[in-house]
Image 1 (cartoon, rainbow, N blue to C red):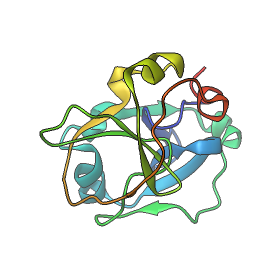
Image 2 (cartoon, one colour; image 1 turned 60 degrees about the vertical axis):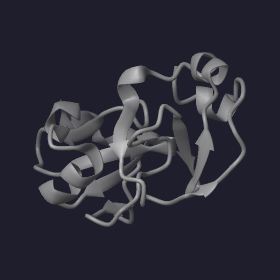
Image 3 (cartoon, helix red, strand yellow; image 1 turned 180 degrees about the horizontal axis):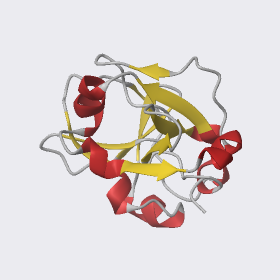
Length: 140
């Protein structure tokens, strides 16, 4: 399946666009405005079209929906406007990713969502300072 937090996906039999979160759960992005608000004006360049035959590889309970006011789903990597710090979203907390942890957990630079607005507020969890198996498993 698609690594959580990196790409948006749609299946070839539906116009719906999803973000992939931890455990291969799908979060339906309700419309283009919501996609732009979260992923920027060029959000479509993040979207990958998959065959409907692989839809069963993903968990879709229909519960996770992202609208204009939504925060980023778990497994997202974000960077706030005017800051170089990288944060990993987990259970509605932001966890600072230290440089050595970025490498150890095989995060990808292209996954980072940049210029996140400062009012996108999360509680702050413990920093990620090294390898964490529950993160790495999704970044293979």
